[in-house]
Length: 150
Image (cartoon, rainbow, N blue to C red):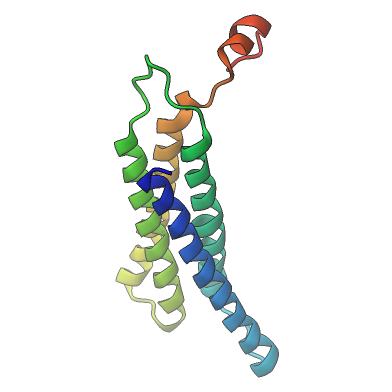
């Protein structure tokens, strides 16, 4: 398994551990102390699980399992998959951390961190799928024989 694929998968597991742990913390506070989570905490939990875990796991497995680039493929670039990883990881981490502190602060820097983190998530996902697009294809005999390719 290539190092970048391992990094995607291990980062996904890290976000899962955080997301599940934080979800348990919010559950205990709600059920035992009567304190409902703030919308920012719900958003942080959701992004840790859905983007940090689910999307990172999907992207890592896709990078590993989707067919290798065709010999004439000029769009796929492993360096772009690496940049996508960093955009998605740093964007998700920044957003989650900033949203955890949002109930205590209305500081513009914290609010901009949430927005920039979200933009990093979008950029990372867009870049990943752009660079992987040409690798999503059928077998050559299916594409040329049945007309069901692309």
